[in-house]
Structure formats: C-alpha cells, structure tokens
Image (cartoon, rainbow, N blue to C red; front, side):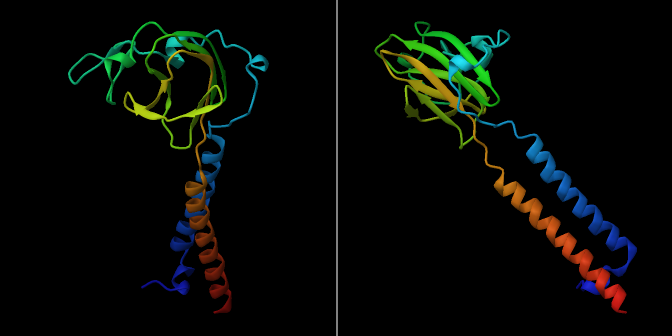
Length: 193
C-alpha cells in the first residue's frame, strides 16, 4: 500500500506532475474544442453561408435504407419509418448556420408528419424547435438527429446543440487536484525528514 511518504522518490513525483499537467491539458482541450456554443440569434442577423447546401446540413429523406442496402443521398435508416413519413413534397428554403446552431425555413404541405434529418451529432442536450414548439429528437442514420415535422406546416426550425462538459471537466479537476495534493503532501514529508 502506498503512503504519502512513498511519493518522495523522483519517479513518483514525476508521474504526479505528469498526471497533474495531463489533467490541465485535458480540461483545456475540452473547453477549447467545445463546438456547442449557442447564441440566441435572429435569422435576419445571420449571414447565409452559401457553402452550406440543404442536403449537407439537413434534408427531407425520400427513401428508407434497409440492412444490406447501399446508403445513398436522401436515405433514412436506424429508426422505424412509415412510408407516409417520407417523400419529396416538402420544401427546405434556406438554412442559416452559426456555431452549433442551425435555422431553416421549411414547409410540409402533406397531411402526414415528415422526417427531417439534421446532419449534426445526436446529443441528449440538443433542442430542436419548430415555430416555438419543441420537437422530440430521434437518433437516426448512425448517430445524427431526426425529427418529425407536423403536417400542413410552414415555419422556421431552430436546432441548438447543447453538450454538457461538466462530467468530464469535473473528473479532470478531481484528478488534477488529487495529484496536486499528493505532490504538496510528499514535498512536505520530504522537508520534514
């Protein structure tokens, strides 16, 4: 069993410093790579990104891909789909994108709910609203988001990704503080002897 005085050796002290530094770097990387920054913005204030084509960010699927099928553009899979919920009648007018947030003008002129696939990673903290109503998000196409757009509807869809990093940052902080405590404690034990 290790005691605090065992950490006097340069080997253990080096490992603890490395552990402390690694936890700080990990916490920094988590904060820096957080791509889920959400800002509440009005589509009129956003610049329409011409490089974002409707089929790349989100689309209304018009075919179901089953096991063994070749996945092609316009497919939906990985979720139970009724054939009334797919088709080519829906209209996706324009899309605005801004750091983890998407907004689109769309129309579902049919009498059925229609699937819309949003090519953004599925996160439980994400929120998709259509005309101020929150829509249930489903995991489709191996990890992206899918929602059912209500029948006979026209409006603006808002997708905001919110990813909580508190669990990862909490673990990194605890590991770093534990390593720092052991370093300080072993330094005191070394000076006391």
